[in-house]
Image (cartoon, rainbow, N blue to C red):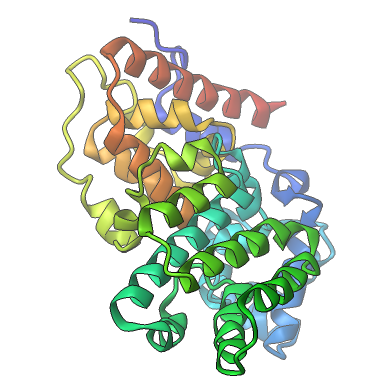
Amino acid sequence: MEILIESQDAAGISRACRKGVHMDSLKYHEVAVGARIYSLRMAKGMTQEQLAEVLSVTPAAVSKWERDLAVPSIELLWALADFFECDIDDLVGRKDARIEAVGAYDAEKLRLSVTGEDLLKCGEISRQKGFPAMQAAIPGLKSESAFLAFSIPYMMYLTMKQTEPEQAFGFLENYAEALPEAERREGHMIAAALKMIFAGGKQEELSELIASYIGMEYRQKGGHMGEILNRTRQEIIDSYKDKEMYSDATDLLEEAADLGDFEIQTMLRNMDEATLTAALAGASGRVAVRFLSNLADRVLYFIHEDVERWSGTEEEVLAAQRKVLEIGSFCMKHSQS
């Protein structure tokens, strides 16, 4: 059984990935760590001296970080993230990069999927309790879509003014078209879905309409995402604690479970969704929890759904796990270069 990490153990990968980390390693989408630290510090109205005191470092260290002359250690990045009440991905500007790196689930489709689940929820509420209840449910929607939050009360307002439906939804389409380009598809999906909801369309038809805006991957999930999105992040992760391996042979990632978050996240950024799904489907609960805990919320929901539905062979699991180990080896070599 060939293991692509060769003679390196998990601790060796961890040391190698940390060795040689420099400013460019912590710059994603042209967002430097220093600029983020400066912005967050200024938002709190703090001086460099005050931040240094909180972190038990020198003011000179903070100054170097903000000027991109040095970067905080991994431990200090965690401390900064905790203090500013964000996560490390937000701090270094790489959350979008990691979301987009996970297979077919790019940032737009993730956003559309969560908004789509909200629209399905709105459809159920409108049929069971009426349109006013749908408007009252806006604060509890998971997507936090600004256009959806605008559209529901706006259509209620036009309905109360007895505006002709075609004219009312024509207005809404105009608003959708005026959205920034990145939000326009979501806007048109919301307008079309609400038009169907207000017309009393069937839930099955609404589901098909939403899927047609997102793509085949979403449709093939058969609406199962709604059930998953109702679970909390911790509930999903906890469900893997007692997970068994596919077989005794699919234990190739056991040592990788001892890696730090930085190394796990580096591997995830270079991994496609299919590889991650197959590798985790055959891994132990210990391994699955380590990798899933380092995924952003929306990606976690999708990968969890795929792992639950995965039905492959031992050979496919082993191939995926070897690829994960190869990515770990690449991390080591890249850091040493």
